[in-house]
Length: 366
Image (spheres, rainbow, N blue to C red):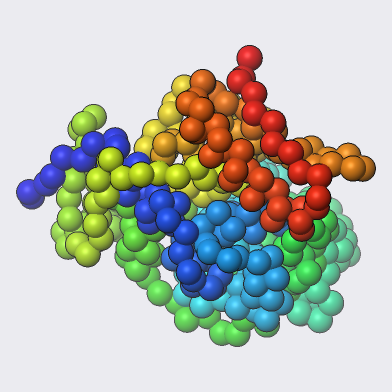
């Protein structure tokens, strides 16, 4: 099978282009989310920032409206974590990624979930969720009424893993706390229209390629996909990396030159671009991984400088001011520092709704 060599720089710029990070796009937020396939949403605000950094003229109200009108849903999805996904994609691909949710049940609860009658739990939960739209805590209590001797946390997670659920707005919208209520995907979005694994793989390549099956498994949280996708690989373009990996891509997707200009971009916490490949080195140098992926699975907000993650950021507020704190992993040029400050002030205007006393402080990591 003929193949072309790809440099790390080409992989980096190609990923940035497909993620709308080389140039902001003029897209509505639903179209953008579909192009990205899904956006991780452990907490409500980061996807808003992720869209702001990728789209021209993005306003928070656009995404909130998409959630409230059911064009976008917040749901347990890839890697058994909360994601924003378009209604159409959720109903196409939920059945495909369901094994990742089941894997999450086994990983998180182990022996505590053994012996659960999942079919019975789903039968109990479905009408309750559709009628009451309860919190997970209330769902736990409801299940324990029927199964008093079973682990109520494991029961609720089993329902979450085997019955497609949606968080009901305002859960998931900007500034809303973490308390959420749920209903079934079918009652909220309508009947499912299942697609197949190869279609999801092609969507993944369009957003994150070139890549291989192990990368796809990392992104989905699924395992054992190589044999299932092997027939699909024959129709794809092949590339080889300097370290000997064979990557695949869609025939119509361009490879971006490694010299393409890459502007400063602020990425939110948990951005999928950092989690979508087994080898994250195409955007996050290994030397910096532990500075970004910290305790309890948290992924910090990052700054992309000349195409690669080279800083982290956070916001601190008091009664009179909001300050964006940028911590660099290494020294940067004066031009880069000026660009970080300018883009940081634009980000602060978005986050703080135009508050007047905004500051950017840039420091070198100790």
